[in-house]
Length: 291
Length: 321
Image (cartoon, rainbow over all chains, first blue to last red):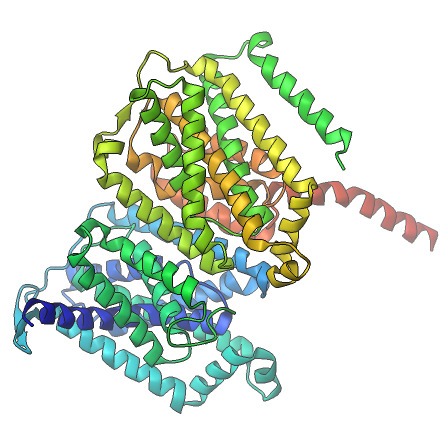
């Protein structure tokens, strides 16, 4: 017990953040078959938005979440309508959409650099250093709050996808766009909304990240990689799969401190990705991952 | 299979470039930059073997560039190897490193492979930065003055490297292997059914690509006479290779060459003054190319060449009716 238990709780807390972060990427890939390489850039931009709101208007990052959701939903819709819409679907479009969204990422990074310089930024909330005792261990308030927000988000998403007409349309298009068209679903509209929703979720993750980590304009590369590892681990089928994938990654990272030097924990996700893809190309818990 | 026209053209271009510094009054700065550009061309072509011929976009080629550079530098400082041998050693080890991560990841297709390569690049950079016994950490490695060629001589070595890269590019395009690669690019499973072993073919191409990029890294080490891991393994370096190929036209032989020229011109003449803007500018360029001319300069050129006879024919047809 003791240390291992504390680490386990840390892993669960981290997994909450990770699943919120990965869901945006998973949603866009599931519906549009496009890997949003700008995902990390959006996360970074949202962290800067939270920082600006806090710094200029003293808006707490957790209260900034609705603002970020609206702003980045609009950003996502704009990116889809302005750029992604013109890329052909299918294997040929795969390479093009990768490079296109990679270009978007570079532009976002450069914009952040021009606006806010390359210096590291941190949000100092009044409660940043306070902690709560939980199950016998002591954990920072921020991390627990992030976990709660992530959990609520996953629940809301689950309800959206399973209980509403929009959610069912999204799932129908993800399964088969042609058949969805036949039953009267406006597929183009679903694409726009899914891209907006996925981007909004990346925005949410960025706001949450801003309370946990220091960030620079190049923040987001490892977040993109981790999100991808999670959707590969968990499959795209369900909220539960994503949560489990996040848990596996978080546990691997947290417990890696026993085995590898700290600077290599960043490589843990990658190693996990390769191992899983080679051993179980369909993901750990889902199918429908490869194509 | 080998047609004489492209071969003769390449030979003439080689001869012209070989003699140019002797016959033309070229200033030292341009001479050095052109020599370095040759090597960027060679590296972009090598990236293109994987990215263009097989359609597997790698965001992690800086890993092989860095490995090649540091192995070459260490071979020169610690083992006193002549520089050409040191570059070759760097290239071979870089190729081996490419196989090490490539063999398991190349069975992934499309975005899966690409994201894995982002991981490879990042992990390699981290390891290299912390493994300071080998890479010198943040203080880097300086090459010995004795035995290291001057930038003036390096022009011709750069040209040889480019010639080798062009030869391999052409060979990969016209040979049986090239056909196999095209088949893999179109449909991996169908290629497998036709007796093309996708794993073997892709391994071979990634190995060749790794060797070439590694040798280019060794050249770069000699050229700069000083290298540090943050620069050699940077993500920007991988981005640079992608951009050169995309600007020029993915999957062609001449494309990455033209793309490298544009890239170096942008880098040297425009961005020297606006260094804050370079990432965004490259991003914008990437977006514009993908949206309007996914085949890059090659596609643009083809379109321009095709434009005329088309219009001519249409006009004639209209005149006839």
